[in-house]
Length: 359
Ligand code: GGG
Image: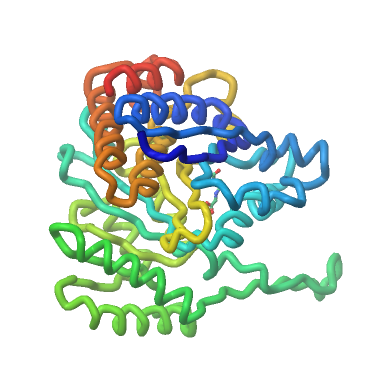
């Protein structure tokens, strides 16, 4: 038995509360099978209900409370009828990403067996790439302000921030990932024809980093045509690296091309392991379907597999647990209960149970 890994479980809002238990169910089943000791501790904050009761998304000591955990397993945040989205996001998820320096947001895009693909003629294996999203700076900046509010002179300004340290470290991660994959391809999202200061800088740093990875075939593509190619030629991508906003958009578009947001997993990584990394589905809290038990738990479960893989850091039992979860997901999607977004009628819990049973 390995040492006990302590995970902070934060359901957040909406369907986060429905999919998180299924993620935990499957992680615990895989842990039992492969002799791992994983212990979850639940927190009810980082939610809009907590905000309504306390006037803030999290208690003041959230950093001290979480920093000793091995990882954070997170559901979803946001309920715009209760709390404006920018307040709930900046009061929780963005704090985690920044304070725990989770500067890599790793988001796999893969067409899985049994999932109806909206793009004609694609079969499993044809689409299999990663979006690597910069996660701590870029367009997600709080630098700016509003003046002359309510008058005709009113104006707002918000800067994007690209530091050499921040750009180089995300590019390094992406090039390393591309180098480790069979196709060794990397595409950098840019918009340097229109955004004339920060994006040419981003391009320069890509070219510089590319020199250190001569085996990686890289190119850069403007975000507009890159988005179109996600839909028309998704098979050509291997690793796509993008700034915070571009990466956020691409990592919704990718799963839309492979069937559903309900399958989109993600890892917010602090690769140096100085702080806990955070694992969450890409999707949000989906208030429109909350309470009906139709949310697809696969994105949460896949995020749990990514968490085990990262925690194990090459350890064979953790890798085996990750691989077993991925195989069980594929088995159930191909021939088991499925939620309505992938053409089935099953409830969230039935899918989680089936994946745990298929391990
Ligand atoms: N589980 C992901 C989640 O709750 N996402 C809410 C959201 O709006 N995220 C925006 C972002 O990741 O930047």
